[in-house]
Length: 106
Image 1 (cartoon, rainbow, N blue to C red):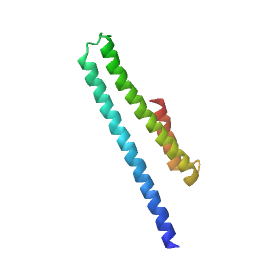
Image 2: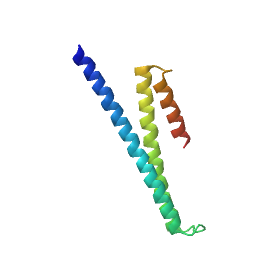
Image 3: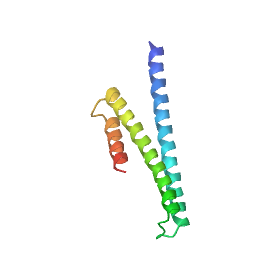
Image 4: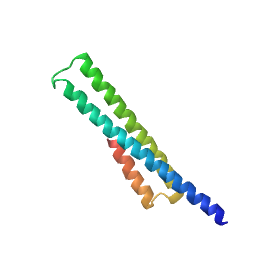
C-alpha cells in the first residue's frame, strides 16, 4: 500500500517539476524574444517601414505569439488536471485560473 502512495507522490512531483520546467522555459523564451524585438527595433529607424524592417519585426512577433500560445496551452492543461485532482475551488486551481487569465490577456 505504501508503494502505491509513493508512486502517486513521485508522479505528482515529477509532473509539477515538468510543468514548472516548461513554464520556466517558456518564460525564458519570451524574455529572449522581447530582447530580440528591442534589437530589431533599434536596428531600424523608428519611422522605417521598409519591407525588411517589417519582415524582421513580423518574424519576432510570430515567435512571441507562438510562445504565448504554448504557455496558454500548458496552463489550460494544468488547470484541467488541477480541477480533477484538487477540485474546482481549490487554492491550486484558482491560482492556475488566474495565471491562465493573465496569459490569455497578454
